[in-house]
Image (cartoon, rainbow, N blue to C red; front, side, top):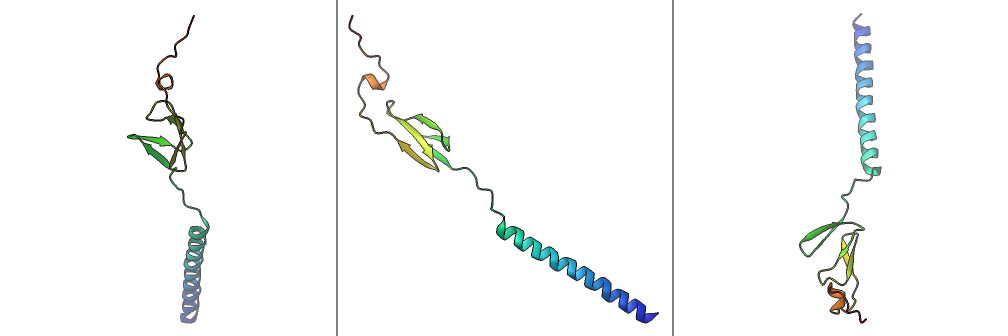
Length: 92
């Protein structure tokens, strides 16, 4: 009877330890292959935050900017009075 208790205890202990080892191995494999969720990059420009791939007006009013992977990219057109929001003169 004591021999059976010892054998049952050894089998139970082996199963428990095996389950723990398999769980640890699974956790290590999962965390090493699972890509972490990254926050989408944002751009800060002129006191505002813009989402990635968002298009917005530049501070000068005549160029446009684009948020690309956390970097603000703006056109570099020369501003004239008509491009800064004033309506052009139309001769009749």
